[in-house]
Length: 293
Ligand code: SF4
Image (cartoon, protein in one colour):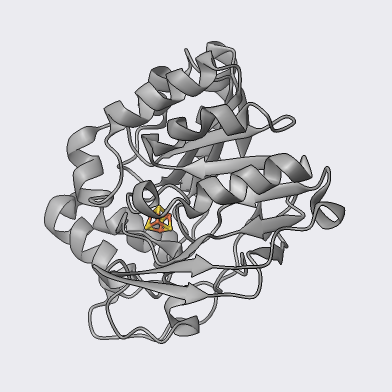
């Protein structure tokens, strides 16, 4: 892992994410190395030639956050990295930012795959209405190792969710990305429901940056699912997501937890013309890069 400290003019970026006025990404890069990482497009904004996941820029800003800008504003930590990647333990960039966000009394929401967030409970409990959300694409540890090799284990995340819940913070679970035929959303809800009633769900949105890696993974481990992936991503059929959305809503109602499903509407997806290659079942639609930073 190549670690570089990089001076920046500000940590704060106005956000286009619904409900988040500002976003802070304390790092560029992410050592969690998720197979489906949507944030790889950030590499082109850095000078790195290393593969995504093999470098981490530690942002350093000498100018303090401005309370007049952030007072009672919704700040998301983070969108294209994990603010609690393992190197945060040493560099404490996120912790120093939280100290300032407490001063600003910002509404902070955190999305992470790491139990390290529990280190900062003393600060998080001083923030108004702070929400800590944990991300799960699976509740199966063997699958987690394959999909998210650098991230915290399922057990660590569940234990951290419990700790954060017991500390009185708002908790949530982002069940995403749901991999067709692979992610068991019921197992995620069942495992997490004792510690949160707020669940959000999103589909796997295939991107050019990872489609070959991911399709190789499907090819090797789930060859029986290749026709389904072709149907969804090559032919653009929507039935799978419509049916899954209904299943999620029904199950979550039975479990008495809230479900916000970010797919199942035709407008949620933007398909662009694929650049066809030789193996049709591995050449899927690419989508627009997200503008999350
Ligand atoms: S935690 Fe998020 S940013 Fe980090 S590798 Fe995984 S998907 Fe990418």
